[in-house]
Length: 404
Ligand code: CTP
Image 1 (tube, helix red, strand yellow):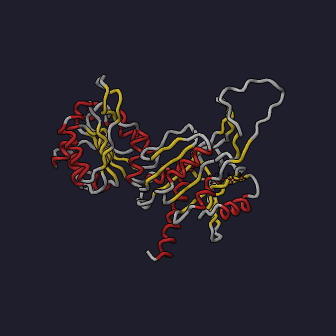
Image 2 (spheres, helix red, strand yellow; image 1 turned 45 degrees about the vertical axis):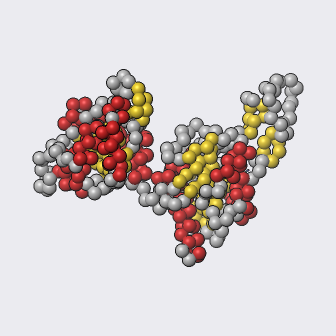
């Protein structure tokens, strides 16, 4: 998702500099062009050659060095950057930047850059807790610099506390977010994801193969685009996405209650969950022991959550999913109409690369006006982007109709 994005990574002299090497690798893997600037102290921890090899670009370390076109490096680098990231950022670079000091290559790049800057402080917890560091971080934040707070945990100096450089995927996610258009700002998007589990005793339940990946991808992308996101999720193996209000639930009834609790603030509802249509009539409090050759479990219908939301829809945009193994079009159209959705995302369960547990999807979007768009096989994050583009379009159309 960072395809061709131009990122300047500033590495300063802390032990976490080794993690910056992994970060370069991840950014390059996501398609970014990365130029690394190292301070003298950073070069004591990791050699420039490591960054040069991983980024595939020369590493800049010196202020008075001319590039081929005779432009001074700090201006060339500042112009190149669509985003500048400082990871790890020591107390020293934070202090210098807060004071406007430009006495080496990195500080001069920072003063010359007009692109957004992400600062990832990492240092001993006592240093991070020092009022002067706190004050400098607050000053930078007030000036519009993005700060990724350090994580808590074990530090290199064998102490515990807040000072660890966050893990690479977390930094990469923050970078993705800073480089995404904020075209869903003002929306509060309620997303459901994953399967539900319907227990019939303390150790057994009925469920389905949903992995939750599509719903989580929607939550990540909606947050990147500036929406407030509530993710109500059945049990999955996925970590809760950063910056999202995460509500774990188990059963369809719990999911329904949670959706209704959060409906008031929602401006958009996206139901990506694979809700179990039936639950056991009785859930025993003790484990069922085996006895007869055959056993019968009685099931009763679960409430249809999206249909309930449809009835209370108001001005909300409601999006549903339909996973079908046959008669995709007729079934999806019926669900769209009956559940009062604005559009429905249909998946053919039988198509290779689509459906449960895969990292890819083939989506087909059907809308109330009869629109029918099929998209090629793509990653679930890209598919989420297309679904959210459609949400934005529905919002713009509604606004235009209402004369706003
Ligand atoms: N859905 C829901 N509550 C349910 C069942 C489904 O909110 N109890 C939502 C799903 O999250 C999805 C849409 O309804 O957005 C369609 O779900 P799907 O399981 O494909 O369809 P059903 O309406 O349950 O119909 P069927 O299982 O008979 O295909």
